[in-house]
Length: 606
Image (cartoon, rainbow, N blue to C red; front, side):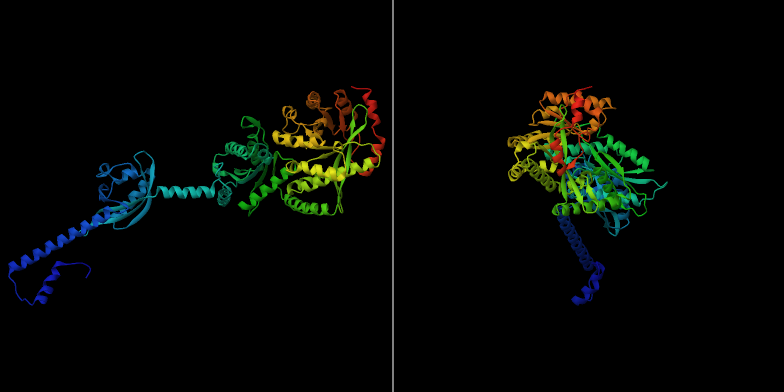
């Protein structure tokens, strides 16, 4: 029996009592009493049910067939900013956000047809912002007829915000706000899977900030983060769809463009590079930043997101090997280059253990009397199969692998040992210059290491000159501390490749530097380029005002010598005097002592 039916009580009561007849009045009285009991029980049951619903943690409302609120179990003021009194008699659909009204009408119709429904919708708070609610609906049945619906709601705004935060952390970079690697890879794969009417291509670029570690080392990581934020902001200017740009990690960014061909891709990358024409402001200090960019196109069938990123990264490494500050498009032959680089790094480790490295020395001459006044130590690699390998062929690989520190330590020790050996052989004592790599200069124990090598080889500190690059002086305070300690040992300091880096004479006047070396790129064209002539003349004049010696690199002909002598440059280095020579040939040069033609030229200045 599914329900309690009053009509079924009569025969059961006759059989149970044994009474065979009752008067009509008695029967009527009995039935009326039973009906009163049934209604009282129902009222009691409804009261209990309503009491339970009133205490329910869920908000519920009864809505009539026209969609208006009839009653609700609690005041919704804290949820939607509206009191109960304002909602009774008002349509539910009016409260729904516009993007949820169609869904709300569909749920309302289905529930009136007897279905139960559940959905996430948005209602508008009285203050004007949307609130996320989860609703469940059930038909309201009275005496077998659906007279409305009951709606149970739960505020899921906080849960939605938590899910959004989790999603943001999973797919976005928390510092720049750009998408991260995971997001970009997914989006790129989706774009590659889309049909491409007219066969446009996807161009992917991989961008790396040149010498970003130097910024961190010079100004601190907080300043480095500020720079990355500014870079991210400038890069977004190149994209209509912000999700097409992402920060991979550190100072690396990636982006994608839809292009018709490689020429259009190059134009888009040109626009990216122009974002770095203007300096960045870091605590009131203008800082010029360059970037290296690798570019790839999905021109080969089967290229997925991972392959395009790999190709762009391979092209990026080619740009770095070629001097940074530019871009290149991936070519299949780059893969062989990458394999060669790995092989080269392995061979370098073996070469150091097998003592395959040697030093060549290039003399530096006084531009007045032609005397040899110094030597620069230059590393060479005696490869068992390839013969004598110049540094340009292996130094970049040593820098990338970190092996440059061990290699630089060997050069420093060998140059000091050889110089002491020449002096012991009775040759005139002159200083030997050794280039320090950035990694060496960044070592905490640099000063102690130099002091230990001088003591080990027995060379007097005044016969050692350390050459640093301009970029090493960006962090003036740190450079000042190191250079003061080195000069306290008695070691000379020279700035190499001056004019190509970050320094200014304002910074250099604070540093204990003895000489500047004008970069060969300026000296090479002083005969044809008036700008280079002006730059070289200005460097010489300003350096002399700071009591610094000036050495010109890359001097190859008499015309360059005359110009340098005319502007009173102190010393020169280059093939006009002598190419780099092995240690055994240095003895003959030191015995000769001078370049005779320099004396002749100096008596006939320009």
